[in-house]
Length: 288
Image 1 (cartoon, rainbow, N blue to C red):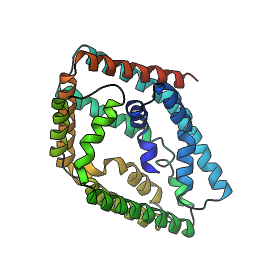
Image 2 (spheres, rainbow, N blue to C red):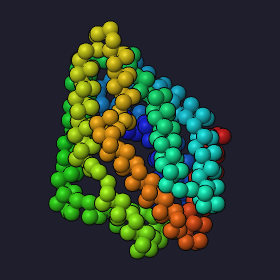
Image 3 (cartoon, one colour):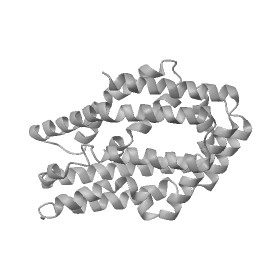
């Protein structure tokens, strides 16, 4: 529920970059056009809501995407244009890449603050005890699925397959990474601090506090505290491990910078073509 509403920009980018289909713009339009239904279904899966509550959820989702399409997509398109120009002119370094990462993070956070979940304090104040129990059970089931995934992941080699997957996905857009470029990525992966288990433990503490707050929803300060808690979700790694968070950002910026410098003319042309394609697609969606 939280993740889906806070990473729309990244979903759009990833949809383009990992698709093997030649009609990427159609795929982006397809997925974006169905994000509202997907978000709505995701929220409704958390509990058995009344007819009135379902109507409120649907309206909140519709309002969010109407705002996001007309307000945010043009910003994303303009921003991609800026990034494209910097890549074309080789006008970047590790510091500028880090600035971009922070800017994209802020764009995501700004969107999340308008999301149906982040503004749902009055809605959550009125949920029943039975619905709180259902939400708690739903979160527990998600935790169990993660545990199963993690155990299977460890049995099959843990992080060993990450580089292979990254290289494969980049290859799907026509950019075949050479051995040197693959090594740049691997070096970054090796230096990354924390992993899925740490992120899961942080998420688990966050959701436990969420349930405790739901149980105190009759208190006068509930709306303020639940809103603060929800809006802190995206910053959990930063709040709990600020040094690791900064370190990982710097590693990511360095890897991206080194990869951009290492691009061959053909790779660079392909990347610019893909960025321009998604930029035009976002403008098309926004102008609907």
